[in-house]
Image (tube, rainbow, N blue to C red; front, side, top):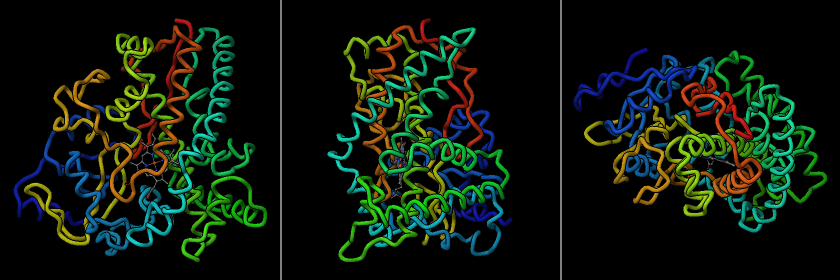
Length: 421
Ligand code: HEM
């Protein structure tokens, strides 16, 4: 594959060697350290495919509102030339089907507006008692699991953090509770780099089939849920098509659960790793919201968000992203950008003097429409967890906590804890 970066780098000055991102995510900290605090534009290699990545907050904000950078895969030179094909294992992350996630401009506004508008503060407040009920049920499960485990160790991910967002987003969208185990299994297979390519694409098809059937049922028999609201909504007399509602439903569930699992786990992990800071939160000297925002900055759920494409040459610092090239947002490196902070960006610090200004929910037209929902889930789950288990502690040294083999997401394999340490 010809590397377009060589030419661009030659024109504008040398860049460090591309970082070949490890699909098995064995050293996320090391990879972040290589990208963070360096030039705003760096080079990645994604399973043999070159891409640029943005590692600084100011440049990310600028580019995420630059309409010369688009989601439309047809703008990708390597796709047009056939150098990247549907066989590339990451293609499902870049091109998971038409939805608000993959389109631009007016088409994006049309697909997104109804969904984003439907997640109103009123709808979220109405969901709060459901979130509280689910959290309380899951805490009972944690208690049971701890009592049953010979060594008292519970995987907080499996028993608490993983089921919570899936149950909440399924309630919001009106997916049957009985469907949740199948949804969980399919999405895990979709994201894992261990899933063979054909199986991943088949998983996406199966999900689309399930959602199409669901949209048909709700069209015939609308309920009080967001999917029905999308079916019934008419954007200036032009309702969303069945395929569009399916795409949005798929994006909401796909984007809405893995990410929130990590938000809950990261906050627990880093507070347990910093007992002095946990004390400040439990004594109400620092709000939970601050701890949640610091976890979002320090250890965000998306490590590398794939992908946008340059429709013209775009300058970034003293470099140029050539027209047709792919661009990734490396949110973990962006969170460690020293520029917006007075204090060490590599420290988890809920007491930092500068306000926490992260962009872990994105920025610009594609900014996450589910941010308030995931913040609500974390804000309910975390105080309830620590109230039920005041002696909670990590059951393994922090360095033994591993990531799942998911190249794009920062997701833990497990978070082993002792509930009455
Ligand atoms: C978009 C992060 C939770 C639904 C995004 C984007 C980011 C993000 C960075 C921007 C993608 C881009 O620029 O291409 C997160 C994080 C979450 C979270 C860190 C939790 C901590 C949720 C939840 C939902 C959701 C709970 C749904 C209930 C979406 C959707 C998009 C999106 C549908 C696509 C929006 C668009 O392209 O216009 N999210 N998200 N996310 N998120 Fe989230």
